Image 1 (cartoon, rainbow, N blue to C red):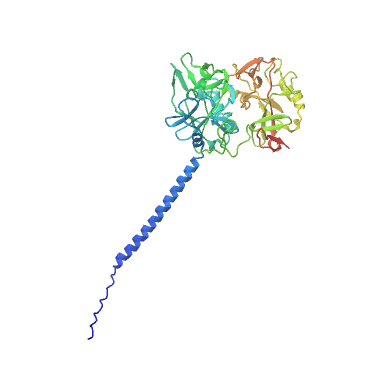
Image 2: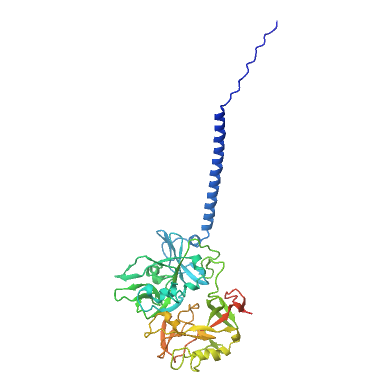
Length: 456
């Protein structure tokens, strides 16, 4: 018997409509593109955030906070609201900038860092007016358009537009033991404020270094005199004609990196790869100098120690009867420096003629420091001036070059108490010479104290 085979049913293929097919293809493509875009953007922003976090990890603010345990009592770094403030003594808050030491005062909320010079940079009368923004200090610190000879300190800073942001300042008024102050002023360089001194723990803080220093403030309880720190750290008031030290205050931008250092005095935070020549050392013969000024051709140098004759500090009067720097008067310090002293120098032939300013600062003509530039002499050897930065704070009790009175017998002295005083020109004081040198003659060394520049 033959079995009847069943016919197999053919399965019909299911076909998508063409429209739905292309819709699926396009949708899948869009999803793939979207996934790639989102992934790429995520990777891009992750990379940016990672790079930003990595860069911020090297900034001065982040490194300083990382290196210091936050404290609530004693010496150290305090967190106050959204700022960090150094208080007390024996702190590792040193920063090297423009070849000089600064101290970190505080870290602002935006991670910019406020610095104050570790020592007084010069000693100067307040000026002819009590207001800070019209004072000697203000114009000596800041370069102002249309104000000739302003910005003496600012001009010595290395690439300030790269490193500095504007610093808020206010002229505090002390009344009934309270400070009235409004932050509505900004400049690249300012002066130490009353609040900054008090916040550092005052007499128990690092800002009390035993030197007379101007503060940015006015006292009105007894008078409208300007305020300063005494040698004991007390806040006192003084007339505008008195001469005290200046500690400049600057603010570093929040993107300034730390290249090396741990913040100690011997190993401060280093923030610059390249710097200018200001305050670097130059060896001439057996004498060590520091660079005060630099231009395209010359550097002006101040001796890093007192003038010596026969291996001893040389004491000299200024003259017999005048505080003018005179090159032709045998009884004048100007004649001595440019004859006997110059001839004793083994390197005299490499020195260049230089302009030294000798204008008068006195009751008669006023205490505006820019009066100094009214008179000058051209010579091989001059002396350190009132407006010059005093890079070696250990030097004291020496004559300054500018005249206190061209008619009288009183000369300006940087005295051994760290004040600016007048003395009789016949008194004997120490001398800190200044000379000029062609920059092209400097061939070796890196300008450090261990490897000073030397001439060919």
